[in-house]
Amino acid sequence: MNSRPSFPLPSWLWPVLACLALLSSAAWGDPFLWRFATETLLIGCAVLSINLLIGYGGLVTLGHGAVFGFAGYAAAIASQWLGAGLPVVLLIGVLAGLLLSALMALVSMRTSELFFLVATLVAGQMVWEIAFRWRAVTGGADGLRGFPRLSLGDLPLSAPYTLMVLALILALSCWLLLRSFSRAPIGLALVGLRDQPLRMAALGYQAWRIRLAAFLAAGAATGAAGSLYPFVNQYVSPQQVHWSFSATLIIMGVIGGIRTWRGAFIGATVYLFAQTYLSSYTDRWQLLVGLIFVATVLFMPNGLAERRRKLS
Amino acid sequence: MSYFLLQVLNALSFSALLMLAGLGLSLVLSMMNFINLTHGSFFLLGGYIGVQWLASGAPWWLAFPAAFVLCALTGWLLNQFPFRQFYQRPHLMQVLLTYGLSVIFADLMRWGFSADTLSPVLPQALRGGVWILGLPFPTYRLFLIVAGLALALLFWLLLDRTLWGAAIRACVQDAQIVETLGLDSRRLFAIGMALSTGLAGLGGALGAGMLSVYPGLDEEILLLALLVVVVGGLNSVRGTLLCALILGFVSTFARMWVPSFANAATLAAMLGMLLIWPRGLGGPVARQV
Image 1: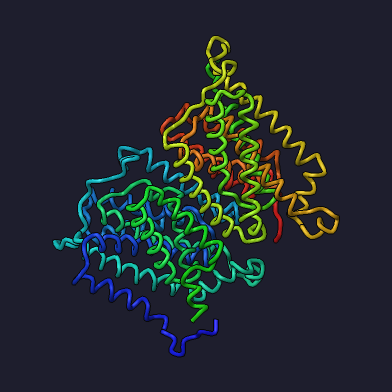
Image 2: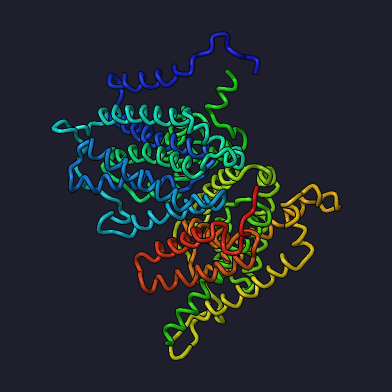
């Protein structure tokens, strides 16, 4: 603990270095890397929202994957009729995210703790059921393919590197949005509600309003990210709506550190890296990912990012 | 009319299955205040043990006790490490730990028992059907209803009517006071965990004859068991039983009337019940802190 470096690196340096590394990969990267980075950045946005809800709000939701997947389905389905222009896709994604988050908040807000967990889980699972059974619109278990590629006016945006830059911009915006939310008075009230709900109620704060606002902020960010996700591989699967994906998002948040913003992307990178690379070496990659995850919970409950902050 | 009666019996047998899955989880969740997301894995494990046992040629009726004992043993081992350290931790950490473990177990079971759907070889006595008002009904489902009722009664007596049940409920309220009374709370919790996982295993072994066993069943059962226990209201065995009945009936009749959206309808019903009773069917009206 006393190995504190004499010149601590400023905290903004890491994201800047990461962005520079990603952008400069135009010179040496390959489409596989770009696609991987895009997926990581987009899923990282959902993990950012999870961090806001769970880390700051203490609202343990198991339905957040449904928001991500629902926005993806909404954008992909709408693009078949309206075309895949970037503004349209983003708008539909954000609206879908806001709508589902609001609904989820509506059904779960009266409950607390375990009941909250189960209410969000059930609400999310309903979306999955619909995505899975409504074969004519969603493609059912096979997922949805064959929708137009992402573009902006006449400019195509479907090249892997372009998509990655787009995801990077989106990730930075989500980061700024959610971080500002947490630092604004409303974010502080959210933390207050997590720690001292009775005292906050006595002070005149309306819990449901503040929590609804947090849900909406998280839903908007997740919806935007979710709406771009289908265009990475031109494919959406019901897997993105299933509750196990929500649990995976929480796993990523915890691996990275549930109360840090950087941690969201670190966790997403570690998890997806393990998933992608272990699965090409062994069939038992789920076992290994599970082991990594349990080890994180057992030995490093504060996550990777938090640990580093404590050391430096 | 007779068709309707058969559907009622179908619903009852499904309810019995849910009861078996829910009771074990109810013990851990409401009595011990521990969120155990590996509960479905134990159900699946019990199912695999039952299938293997029935295929092996050993006395068939021992398959169910065997599933109970083996799953209880596994649960007891898990209690020693790492569950015991997590009883006092926040719910989020329990969710994370047990979800991670359930991912590991799911993959281990896919490895050990293959990824195919397995159906048990039922003994002669439970095979075939009986005629009820002119329509055939599987004997096995009648057996399930009887077994489920018997176990539910036993479990309710154990928790609500014995000193041991009172002691384990007291442990959640204030473990230190219980310890000053001379009871070992750690041992009580270990027994509680073993009993809960054993019940899950027993449910799995009994359910194998109706549902078959396959990877992914663990998640489905976990979701249903969570619904039964939580919507039924914590701290209330009666609520759990009532909710198992409601869930069984709603899902059976939804499957009859809206086949493709049966699960969505069932989930909607559960969500509606949570909206009306935010603390569950049998839960207390309001409790501060």
